[in-house]
Image (cartoon, rainbow, N blue to C red):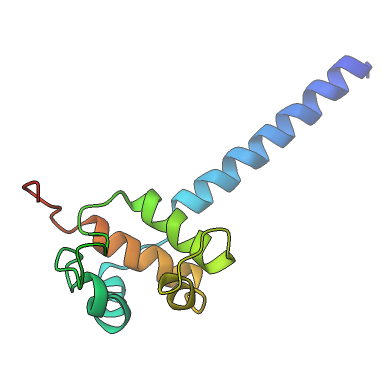
Length: 116
């Protein structure tokens, strides 16, 4: 077998593995009801049950926000690559499934309809 053919096969195998990995992450189960429950237990006090009734004007509205953005933000708070004195300790104990669920729940809520 030639070196070029061997390299081509190796690249193909790596590409297939990457694509399958991305698909399995994208296909991760999201549980709306579990996200709603977690939001009511953990997030409601500051963001409101639907993510639009915030405690203070500085508290971000989560309702209608992009799912991927919410997942990324919560993971960053959990890892410590994004820090906030209130959010960091709230995100640290969350599992990947809980982050996925709560992000899914808030992403399905109606967002802000008018400027404030």
